[in-house]
Image 1 (cartoon, rainbow, N blue to C red):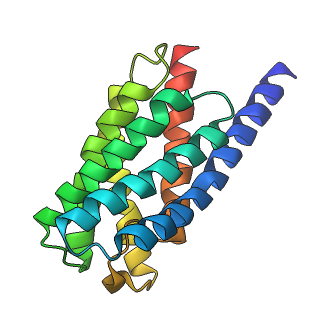
Image 2: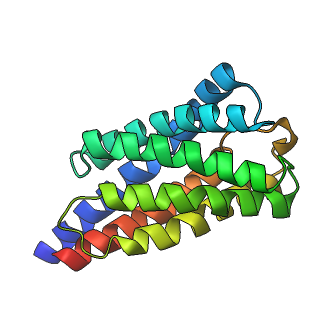
Image 3: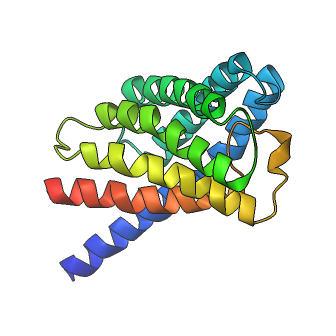
Length: 182
């Protein structure tokens, strides 16, 4: 019975974390409203930071007390701003599939490092978060592009299809990291 309760609790936490994907399009709306399209360094930095702010806040809410807002939100804000500026600049603000996957991977590097440092102190294998985040963000852009979303519009974040994918898989990673510390 205890095993069933643990699995049920883990599944519930994962499902709520995954539902936090809604913060991604909301963040994208704010980032685009303020910074416009991601077609220059300033727009990428500001739009990415605002998008990260909303995503970070949404993830804190979805984590239901498992992430410290004072660490996670600023880390996600800064990591996303720097990451999108880096990624978009390296690919020359192009929107082809290989460009967006590379942009996602490069966005995920500073984002993953910042978020890994913001994870709860008891998570010793936080470097795994830093390693998987770039892969997941590249995947998010691939899924969105292959789903037929008009990525040529130069959004700050991938679409809902990519966000669900990233949220679901990062939720599994978060579970694995927390489970290894139990």
